[in-house]
Image (cartoon, rainbow, N blue to C red):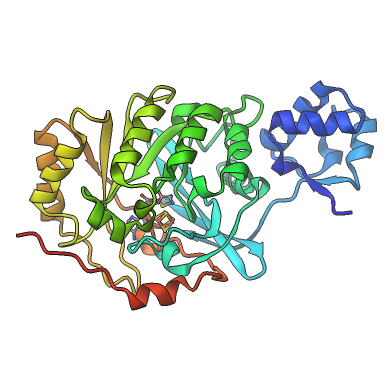
Length: 369
Ligand code: SAH
Ligand code: SF4
């Protein structure tokens, strides 16, 4: 029988597992702290853990991280790791240091089935969901690797954003225990406000997340109207904008922040005109408590799309701000190592032929007047 990977358990899950082995629940807390707070991967290291438990674990269980295929460090300090997840698939995680925080951008799937036009992961198609252990392993590795490099025992990663490869809400069952491990005081102890799930808009799962694990929510909007959003984010055909915004409002009842972050990828002459900014104001103002995060499009080969000029981004932001909507323009980080939003490509054994589909159906957008 395969050994159980303990990285796949949140604390209640680990407690249940320990009970199965005939051990007391509090042992699970000790074990959980060794794994996540100290980065231990070897049961022999766990000096204060009863010998009987260590012996039971040896052979039955492992603490198995992911192997690192490559590491790139950007001039601005951003670090990108490529992790092997087997069968020719690899996923990426990116660490973004800032003065007052350290953010890790984590992947949830090998590839993505949503297939957004402007996203390099989407162009690669979909291979499979990551397991809870594989999601947590990205944080486990990054946190303890960074502590070692910085010769510190203090926490380095203060924020996690589920904005790497994949649509987290299409991998819901594996995602939630991973989020719980991030939040657990005996795990990474991150506050709900500092863990963000970013979604292209899987409406029923937004509702479930509100009940099961309300963390900060970012929604990838990218267009003010359904016809345009249908083309950019194909999931919109299933869950159109009005349903999505209604789900955002329901989410706000339980959210740790009193706003939703809307992400909007700025594509030259596709979704970036002042008229479209006005449409966005009409859509959102007084309807959903929100902030807008404009992301200059990060080009990749074969996208066929162009990044909006700074002037167009500024003009667009101006319209929103004039209307009283808090708007920020995301700084691009890790440009020189292809670690910016939407450039995470990893290696995906596509099972959906997404690439072929997209090349056959190029984006066609009515130019604004
Ligand atoms: N699947 C989730 C999370 C991963 S994508 C989602 O779509 O929200 C994280 C963010 O990067 C999303 O807002 C996405 O729209 C944005 N993004 C994707 N490709 C991009 C690109 N080429 N340039 C800039 N942002 C991009
Ligand atoms: Fe998937 Fe998000 Fe990329 Fe869309 S933007 S293809 S949902 S990872």
